[in-house]
Length: 234
Image 1 (cartoon, rainbow, N blue to C red):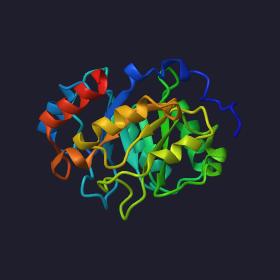
Image 2 (image 1 turned 180 degrees about the vertical axis):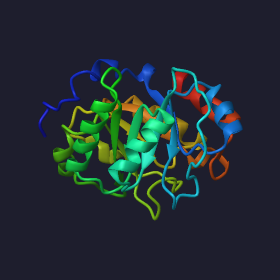
Image 3 (image 1 turned 90 degrees about the horizontal axis):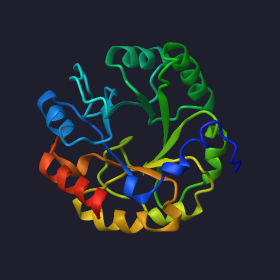
């Protein structure tokens, strides 16, 4: 795979294990959003997909500037994505469907016009079960800033179980990626072990969701705090 992606040059120096980022996805309720924001995750994800039980339909409360707001979309029209970016002042777009490289490029073109001074970044999601054809990434190398690897299941996300991370031993790119899919407190030792391995070199952030919920969209702050502390200091 080519190493000359538009977005591959600015990130790798920051990929130190002590600096791995932390994303809490599937936020839904205002008070809970504020509670989790107080824990200072690096990213908070809001799902704009009507078929999801975590679909977000309200206004996002004001968050600390250190927390980036990520809008999650599944095969949404371009106009809808742009509308949500403007309405909620999103800093990142996560594409969780079958969006083509051409669609990703169109989003980047539109978002660059919308926010030249503070470019909005694009995450393209790929779902993995027991194996993955990494050649699929080739055509996305120049049209997104990050990949996210999630567990393939009946839903686009939030299925509650992990995939076999040894698949990532064959990761051919230098593009930073988010690791997602069924990660909870029970997996923290496995996550730390993975982050110590050479094949996690480009793992940029850990993404959590359903394993920290008391009900869909409602996160357990105590468990998230414990996980984040172990992730940062383990």
